[in-house]
Image (cartoon, rainbow, N blue to C red; front, side, top):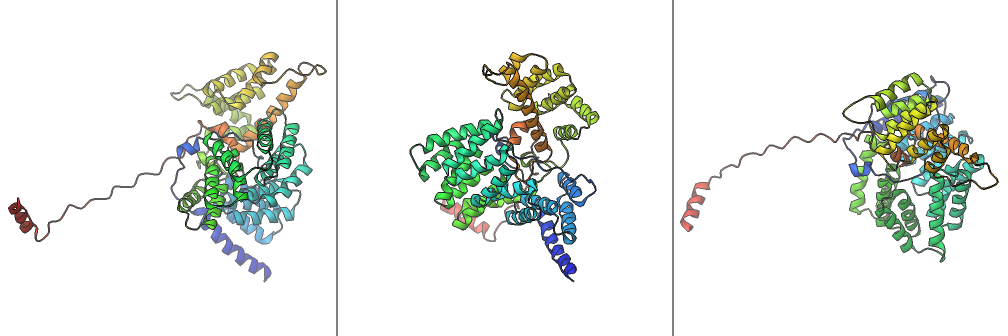
Length: 488
């Protein structure tokens, strides 16, 4: 009886989930929003599917990555009806909820996953990130701390600590978290971000406690500079100190600029709780909700959503799967073929990475140079070119391209170069994972990697024109015209 009752409950829940996931409103995000290049550290890579490719969870992950969200949800709901303690299944179902803006349902699934398996880092990370998206930093902090304690070398949970402490106005703790990032992952994009944030917090908090006006001003200035991720942190700080509907709405716009639609929807919900008649928030809420349902998938970054596999993502997947035959074919097709449209920076970067792994550093360097010519400020291409030059023995050129300072006197001249190469390749694997599956909160880290190469979703087709009926003549039209003529 208990199992039958649970199945009925799951069937009812499944119907609601599938109805939400199947909603397919025709909506394309604003192109300027989609091409925003806000700099941000990389989020954690998604957890790899279970080793057993035939397991229900692995099949659900594959379906989600292929755009078949309703089928993925149905498999997980049926599996959980008989296996309610499967933490990985709860985690994956939570990802489906989160990617469609259903924060409360996602939080429940992630919480069940953590209760079922406290060592499942992906579930704890998803829970912490979703709590932070919902502006529940006090609840998110213990989960970030647990992630740091279980793996001190992972800088990303420290980033979560830094962001949450800043939002809560805990400046000393935020500086400590940033210092930890700089120590643990030196030379990375994440460390650069942490150093800048630490210095700015020190500067702003030198005179004592920050006022709400200072937080607002800092957030607005960063927003004007198109640094939406950092702007969101300061705007959230002001909102935490003095909640108003206008502040929640401004925070939502910062999240939109960073393409974090899940957090944007949570901020808009908060704005409407503070002021149910806040018209801009109500209008934006409807737009963001439709965008999440239409484009918020685990298969593609929401800014460049396509249900079919684009070439860059296929190549990234082939490199991760070590399918070198397919990878070489794709790389030759994208970077070597002579077409009217030249290959983009990402295609050249991926093809060069493949050449570097094949041991042809000279070919790799040529492709990386072409990528930098296409996008001169591309951080990943710059580091990759430094790597290729180091492999060719061009150590001084590699050091200059990597922006590495001279080593201290007690260390060998080139000892730090190999450390740079190792860190660069680990960071690039993170990029590849994020291209294949952006995870619960598709972050702007992908934009630096893919903006300009992957096509935008097509605009919705125009509506047919409404036929205009010809004007009809009234009964008194002749008399009226005659009267009008006499008056003249």
